Image 1 (cartoon, helix red, strand yellow):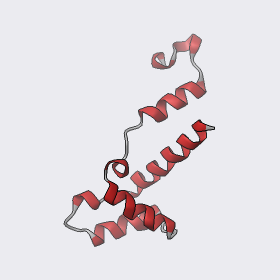
Image 2 (tube, one colour):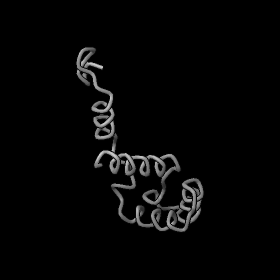
Image 3 (cartoon, one colour):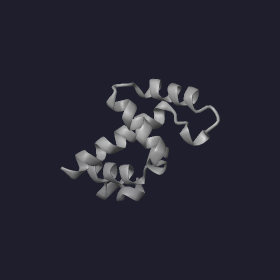
Length: 87
């Protein structure tokens, strides 16, 4: 809690914004080719679990094109949080 102002100065909203900023950038942010494929499947209303399974089957020899469903969910969460923080 000391990193967020300590007992006397702690503010939940400020701490939440800081936590979002400090989240590691998911693999999707670092690999444009993977991001493009995942975004395409999301637009087709595929679930993150379906996408992760399809990627593993479709690109068995390309580790760059592998991502877990948790990573996809995290990416969606970070994007949503960034939009909320901007308002």
